[in-house]
Image (cartoon, rainbow, N blue to C red; front, side, top):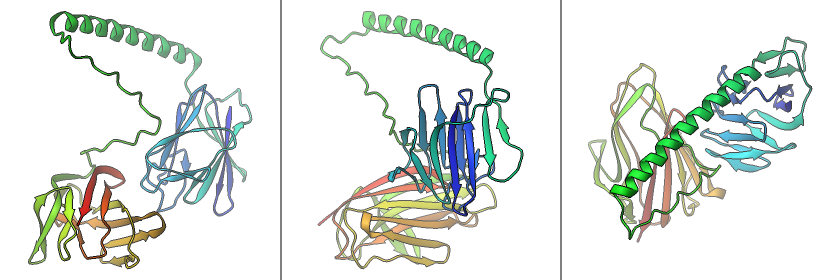
Length: 316
């Protein structure tokens, strides 16, 4: 049985005990999570704890990230060890290792510092674990025989003696979450990145390119057309990384958009709400003589979902 101590910013403390029958539990601001932290900076499902007999993995899939022992973890995963601390927006989770054993219920138990009934999430019974292991072994065996047959056939009929394939690199535990075109509640009809034009207050793409010349007055960025299926607006978020940060750049908020700066780490954030009544939008930078030279990276999200990563290189 593993134990986690959750300390909220208001001083409330809860202890969460997990046995080996639970394979995962989540933390986020929505009520379906096992650990709920109602803070606007938290994502709906901010992160997941993946539990096995050998280890516990903390996998962050959020927009604003987490701090594990003071180290930033964002869209990646780390192994947890007893004594590790996860700092979130509104609470801190301490991995205490062994907790109080509960042989009668099993699963996941949340104990509050105030008298209340514990919340129990049932785990998988030992019998089902054995059955699941047998099914997995059977599937692995079938797949292995299929691969052996396929490789044999390929060698006999499609051999290139002068070519050998390098083995694939193993998947890293820090592999980021993948980009996706599936955005709930909306469809992106077109998406372009490059040189931008403006006419009568409307933006358009002139040339798709990843290389931008630092010509004062020129514009570059992303332009896209969309349709929102439901009535509610969709949040657009852009995480921006720059090679340097001019001292004249400042944050601002206007209408339904805002721009926040983090000069110490050469990072900025742009947020806006996409209206169902519109069908196009653009994020545009006006170039001046102070604009930093080098590589710029924009991670583009719709409602906490990573849609694209766009990279520009600004040259003289």
